[in-house]
Image (cartoon, rainbow, N blue to C red; front, side, top):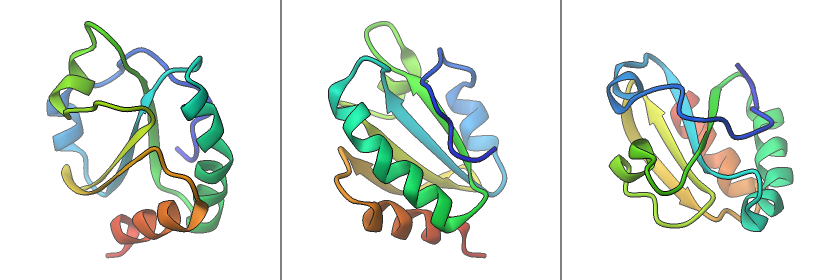
Length: 109
């Protein structure tokens, strides 16, 4: 599951996220968020550089428990997990290098 194009309603729970094996990126935001749209070229480019890392774009907002459980306050927020454990978090990333570095950290064995 490479770069995900759009945000979707929560498809997993916090328990699911913690139970994953290997690298996983959770991206919280909305399709209408201007910050989220502005970050997409950087996120897409980073995923193209690093290779196959699972990426789930989760639509966040009021009444959405997954974002609250990860204490998401600003969009987009990218949570980089390795074997269900948070390794790094980026809030409103503004360049490809930071995202690629975070991806490399979770993709490394």
